[in-house]
Amino acid sequence: EADIYQTPRYLVIGTGKKITLECSQTMGHDKMYWYQQDPGMELHLIHYSYGVNSTEKGDLSSESTVSRIRTEHFPLTLESARPSHTSQYLCASSEYGTGSYEQYFGPGTRLTVT
Amino acid sequence: GEDVEQSLFLSVREGDSSVINCTYTDSSSTYLYWYKQEPGAGLQLLTYIFSNMDMKQDQRLTVLLNKKDKHLSLRIADTQTGDSAIYFCAEMGAGTALIFGKGTTLSVSS
Image (cartoon, rainbow over all chains, first blue to last red; front, side, top):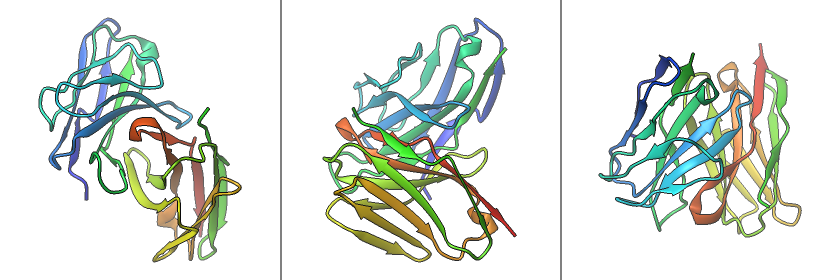
């Protein structure tokens, strides 16, 4: 069982609010990722990190930002939430440089912006 | 560009075998993966296969890889109602990020 956690699991928030989605892992993984999963279930990579102080944008343009100050923590922030941000957000982590690079996923945060 | 294609739906009866197919485009992918997502949950890694292998078996799961045709399949033997979920095929893209297909919804009827 992978040890990767996301909070909150569900969030309903009004337009214009600032929100932070939390993601933590206890496996000591260097690489972490944020995916946005749309209603059609397709996953899109929006951010990733190779390690502390490293962040990169993914394939899908996103108005969110991320930070990686500690290895175990990779929060995602939306400065001003909009209804178009309504989606499921999945965090994942993997080891870097060894093995099969499989990613371990958290349970997700389902965000609804009204 | 990189793209992973899957059929969107598969319906089987309990006890039958399920075969979920996937095609990918990046011939340099070193690993290919199958993930399972149950309602309201994150993705769970089911199995993966290294690109120099043709087949991998793990209990009820069999993965077949045809590198020439860039075709990957997942066979679930003796499918159970608990196998009902969305199954994602993924290949490793640039920088070890994963490129996912759109997912195949497997429905198992008793």
